[in-house]
Length: 49
Image (tube, rainbow, N blue to C red; front, side):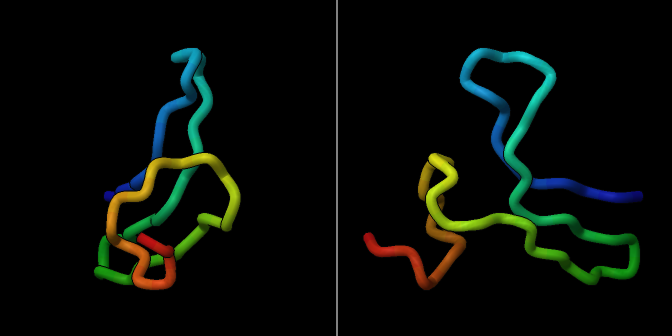
């Protein structure tokens, strides 16, 4: 199983902005970047409040 955390596009099209991918063995791959327009969710300690 592969889990992708992210945010759906505002226009609800078949696009998304991915943030993290979690692999079956628990490893995480961060794929977000700054300035994406994604809402702050508190998971990134480096984001300003």
